[in-house]
Amino acid sequence: MSLQRLLNNIIFFILFFQTATLVAAETSWEVATVFLGEGESQLFQQDIDKNIIELTQASPGSNLKLGIYREMNGLSTTYVPTDPSNTQATLSDLMYRKDLKKYKIPGLLKSERGRNLQNFLANFFSKSKSKRALFIYSHGSGPLGLSSLKTQELKSLLAAQTPSLDLLWLDACFMANIEFLFELRNNSKFTIASEESEFSSGLPFDSINLLPKFSSGKEASIFLARNFIESYSYIKSGTQRSYVNISSATISVIDNSKLMPLVNLLKVASPLFESLSEIQKDKILKTLSRNASMDDHSLVDLGSLMIELRKLINDETADRDLTSIIRMLNIDSIKSLKTNPRIHLHSPESQSILVFGFNDWSYGKEVDFGKNENLKLLLSNDGFINGPINTQWPFKKLYSSELVISPFAPGINTFNYYFISAEGKRLSNALSFARTHDYVESNGDNSTSPLIYTAYTQQLGIKAERYTGINIAIPRTAPSLDYFELEFNRLAHWLSL
Image 1 (tube, rainbow, N blue to C red):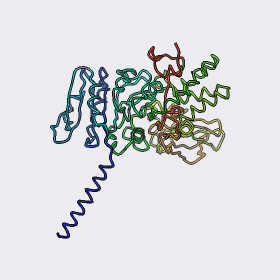
Image 2 (image 1 turned 60 degrees about the horizontal axis):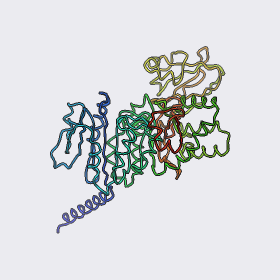
Image 3 (image 1 turned 120 degrees about the horizontal axis):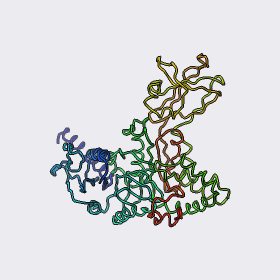
Image 4 (image 1 turned 120 degrees about the vertical axis):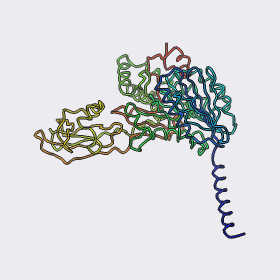
C-alpha cells in the first residue's frame, strides 16, 4: 500500500469517526409547528407566511423531524419534509400569498376541510425515543387560552399525546399566565411563553435546526428562550430588533413539575387582598394598573402584585408567605438589573440648562422629535437650541444641581449632554453615558422555583423594569365564567363570583 493511500485511509477513518461521534452525540427531536390563522387578518396571514419561509431553512434529517400545520380559508394543511430523494412539493398551498411557489422543499403536502389538528399530532409524533416539541403560533388570551383553541380544548388535545411533550412553546400573547400554566401542567415537561403581548414575528424559527444538540427539554427550552430574547436586542444586533419600538419582548421557561408549590403559596394571597380596606384595595389596583399591567389590562405581573401586596400587609406570617413567593420567582435578582439605567446628572450650577442628544449626537434633533413621540416621554424638553454639528438640539431648564433621568429606549444606546448657563455660557464639556445592555435575563437559582429562566427587553421608563416572568388576572376582574372552573382558581380561590 502506498504511503499516500495509507494517509488517505487514515484521514477517511478519522473523518468517519468524528462524524459518527457527532451523530451519536446528537438527540432525536420531533418538532411540530402549528399556525392557527383561520379567520385572521391579512397582516396576520402574511406574518405566518414569513415564519413558514423561515422554517424552510431548517434541515430535517435522522435527528430532526419537522412538521408544519396551518389552518386557513376553511382548510387545514399539513406539510412534513422528507428526505431529498422524494419528489419536491411546492409550499404554495400552505401559503396565504400564492405567488410564493418558489419555496420548495422535499416533502408531503396534504389539505383537508375543517380542523384536523388532533389527527396531525397523533400521526406526527411517532418515535418513542425522540424528544417532542410543539410550537403553537396564535393570538393568546392568558387564562382563557388561545383565540381559536380555548384552555380546556387545548388541554384535552394535548392529553392525548403519550408520552407527554418535552416542551411546549406558546408563540402567542400573555400565555406565561399562572392560571393557564397550572391547567396544562401535566401536558408538557416545560413551557415557553411570554407574559406580555408578543410580536407577530414570533420566535426565530431557524433556531430549530440546533435542537438535536440538546439532550433534555430543559436545556433546549432555555436555549430557545435566550435565542428569542437576543433576536430582539439592539445592542447585540438581533435579527428582529426593529419590532421592539412599541412593546417589550418577554419570555419565560416554566418547569411544570414545580408549579404546585407556587400555587399552594398563592392560596394566602387572595384572602390577604380581601382583608385590605377599600382605600387600600383602590390604591394597590391603581398602582398595578399604572406600573404592572400588561397590554391586556385585566392581567398584571404576578411578582409586582406580590410586592405591592406585601407593602400593605402588617402581619409577620403573611409577610413571610409573600416573601417566599417573591423569592420563588427570583424577583430580587431580576429587579436588581435595569434595562433602562437611571443616570444621576450633576450640573456645575444650581440653575442651568441641559442640552442633550442621543447616539453620539446622531439622533434626537428637533426634526427627530417631530417624527417620534416617544422622545418627549423619555426626557421632556423646554425647547431647542443650536448645538453640535450646527443643529437644533433639545434643552431642559434645571432648577437644581442634580437630575435623575432614564433616557433610553429601543435603539437609543448612548445619551449625550452638556450644561450651559442661562446666558448661553458653556459650563461643561460634552459628556456621554453608554448603556451596556438592553435586556435583562435571570436563570432560576432556586431549586423550588418553576421559573427556570425569564428575560425581557427594555421599554420606556418604569415599563422596562416591571416584568418578573408570569402574569395573573388582576383582583376583582372576571375574564369569563369559564375562569371559575380552572384548577388554579378552585385551589387558590383567586377570583370569586
